[in-house]
Amino acid sequence: QVQLVESGGGLVQAGGSLRLSCAASGRTFSIYTMGWFRQTPGKEREFVAAIGRLTYFGDSVRGRFTISRDAGKNTVYLQMNRLKPEDTAVYYCAAAQTYESSRPNQYDYWGQGTQVTVSS
Image (cartoon, rainbow, N blue to C red; front, side, top):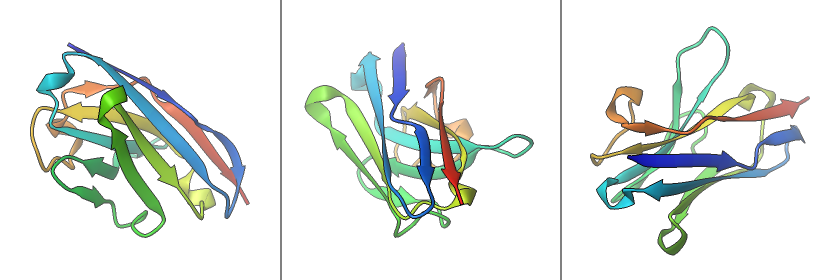
């Protein structure tokens, strides 16, 4: 089993920045890709970013968000810049036992989510 704990969400004004963290524990050696998704009420979970052998991003955040990891701390970060009100969502960290994973059903473990609210 792998446990994921997100932190760093909050309220920010449009144009501002936030950094989310996701700390992994447990059988982390089995994880090949770490990703971030987001979800708003009534909508499907949306892919945001992932890091495995490569980094890749959803179309709506490419150029504004970056993803990185500290392997020694088993932690992945999502740096969110130039935030927009439409970025408001619950952000979930996820871990996959496969590479090149951008669909929710490819991920095996999920965090509890952290709320990000961007005010206009």
